[in-house]
Length: 192
Image (cartoon, rainbow, N blue to C red):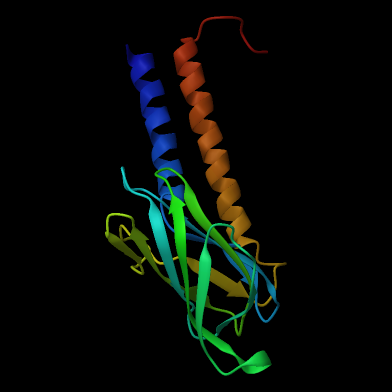
């Protein structure tokens, strides 16, 4: 019975880590090189049962510029901006007409760039087919945190983000190994 409890606890821990990592609006890549144009992806999950995501509104933060958009089949895009041509500044983008069901993500891509090395938080508003609205604009610890991008001057040398990911993956592997050993009950052949 103890083995089953340990395995269940390990499985629940893994599921909690996964749901925390994937249950929110996300901007990819999470770490980007400052002052370099690159492709960004906004993914917004449809979490409400019995409703679909029909509208997504994005407000980029000051210092983050959007140069162009990739087509998103099934969605219409409206852009509010100041200026035109190379001096245009996108203030808000609204995608409408989609029907993303529960358990799937609405995904939008665009070419953008950051002005400096810092963390950029995006305001995202999600509207469901039943009229419910979720504002993804809160702090990281909230139920609806704003998607962020950490802009850095160099992708080499620091490695702190990769180190944290490697440690988390390693710790998860150790937990799975311990759970397997406990489940095995010490029986079987001995290791030399």
